[in-house]
Each structure stands twice: as C-alpha cells, then as structure tokens.
Length: 228
Image 1 (cartoon, rainbow, N blue to C red):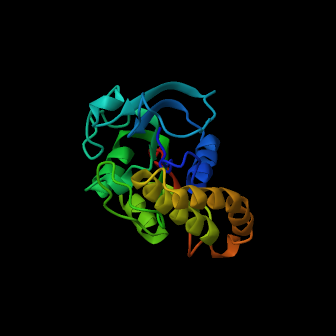
Image 2 (image 1 turned 135 degrees about the horizontal axis):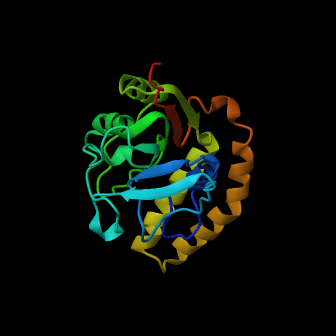
Image 3 (image 1 turned 45 degrees about the vertical axis):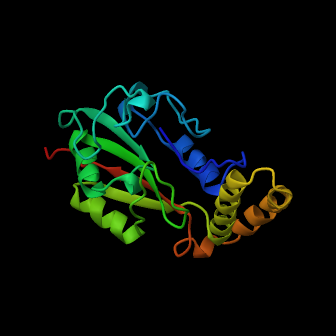
C-alpha cells in the first residue's frame, strides 16, 4: 500500500491524512493484490482492518521496493479470477495506460471481489517517476464501468481549504528543500504550522463544495458475481 503527500517539512498534507483515514476503513479480504505496493520505505500511517486478510501480495515494477511480484499494472502476471481484493492507491496518475490497468484489476478479481483505490485531483504534480493525469468523477466512473466493474462509488477527500493548504504546503516544502537554512523559509514554515488548524477547521464547513473542489478521490468498485 502506498500514499503520497509527505514533504520535506516533515508534517502531513491534509490529503495524506484524509487518505490514511479512508484506507483504514477498507475491508481487505482474502488474497489482496496491492498494486504499486512497497515492502520497504512504505508511506502512510494507515491501519486497515486485517482480520479478514489471508495474504498481501505486493506488486510493483520497482525492484527497490522489493515486491513479491514485479510486473506492470497494465499487464499483471496473475491468472484471471484469482484474488479477492485489489488495492491501488495513488498509482493510476503515474501510469501511461491507466485504463488498461483498471481492466487488469477487474480481470484478476474473483467474481464478487472488491477494488479499493484512490487518485488525486487538485494536488501538486508529483512524479514517481512520472505524473500523467487527473480524472474527474465522471471519467473515473466511465472507465471503471467500461472495465466491467459495478457499484462504483467515488468519495472526495477534503474541500477547498484542504486544496489551498496542501498547495501552500508542497510549495513551501519545495522551497525549503532548495534553501533549507533560509531565515525567510524557516519563518514561513512556522507560520504555516500555526495556520494549519485554521485551514482544517474551515475545511470542515466546506462539505457542500467538495463535489467541485477537492484534493482527490477514493474509489470503491465491485466485480459482479457470475450469473447463476
């Protein structure tokens, strides 16, 4: 499992915090294929319910992450109908063919299996190694539905104040990396830390606009059971 959002300042973006909370609500059952998963240098403070987990299979193209299966997300080296749950967080934006990856996730799931994933929307560019796209809920729903998924649910993560906070946070993190000992940069970091509770408080009242302005989305989708 992976999430993005940690910066050089050393505290979390709000998107990262919201995403960790969302992952903690996922029910990971049976054999779980963790697309883009990492066994080393894992990011995030998520703690999902593992009481139904039998095995977590990490899948990555990066050998440094020490995956159990090294292959592309668009050509998964697994037989069809073989896993119970697919986890794919903060991965689709880094793929040059995300539609193929979504179709592959559906292929390897057993009938009745569940997909859990996420994708940023109004969030800074973050290459890993590349950052290709951002999708709207309409696009997400269309791609997942065409790939064979049903009951596609898309949940926004945070509103306008989370977006503003995270953009400031990432910008100052980048600035701090370039000139970490600058008195101005240190002062800006202190100010930003002090303002964080204010931004998060304001974001709590921005629920009505989250369908228009959000940091990104969590996706849950079901592979239909076979017809009797």
